[in-house]
Length: 462
Image (cartoon, rainbow, N blue to C red; front, side, top):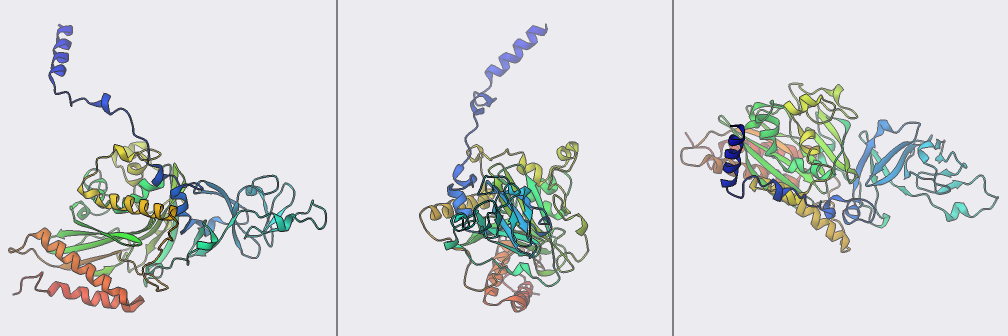
């Protein structure tokens, strides 16, 4: 009788359409996309990345001991000498290749412990004490070195050719009234791109952060927004527009190439009127090598971004941040029960296989980011200069923001169309604010955003 039951099961399987149980035909995994994912020296994407400034560590990590770092598949050492100069050198001494992580930091420079060669922060060999007097080695040999810049608790590096070094990037979100920037760093055992794409994938907040597991931020994040993705010369931004009762909430998120991203307020509910509330995170996703990466960032604290004080400043540090699901520091049971960004990104694998994906309409932002990175990579390969900033102002304006205004539904207009029209007007005003800077820009934008709630294009008159 048991065997007869199994025969019936097999008979049923054989009667199924051939497209079911297709595991055999789908077992082969496609190869990764090396053009986008490999960032080591002399790779196409590596050459592109080496035309930008980006952070490599926190200032607090650079102490009176050398710090070994791996960035863009290069082994490096970071140090600060007694004069306060911060240096970023190739890890291995130019003499006999001992690691400078065991070097001795002096008043000026770092000395290799093996034979005493002394290096300045720009790679100049200052002393070769075992060599005869008059040895030409100090003039002949250079230790590999890169320029660094410390700013707001982060150490930035430029690892490209000095003939193409750009200005240090300065954006308006670096100095916002009512914001304190607290640096942190998180590690991911996977390729940088699958981490960086998160900002251009806004629909994941509906499911990953709200509907599938536990609510990780606010219940209103479970509302599917009206999406629009916008392309630009130096970056991309998306608008997410929500209907929350009689309020329309327009959120803007932005990525500046290659992976400099900005996220709006975490604890926003979309229920209270407000205008042009800025970033809660300013972050860079940086390749360590092809299968490891890090987010290095500032969390924004203060009344302007978190008036209810829900943020937890003391949790923001190296390998820790104050919102759920961002590191491996959780029980596996908790990861399975309530997965977050870390599990979503890392479980894709060491390097995502794009050819195995089946992208849909809501993945437009991800596709745009990949396409624009590919274009930039190929431009550099063809000898074209990288365009770093829109315009020539010393401080560049960003668009990341949250605006919530009272605009009820209309009987004579589809609500998705109404929300899309409101979002377009919000962004028209924000872009027009580029004619101003600082407090003047903020005042202009807020004043004009407030006019939207009484605009008869969007609100039915009494």
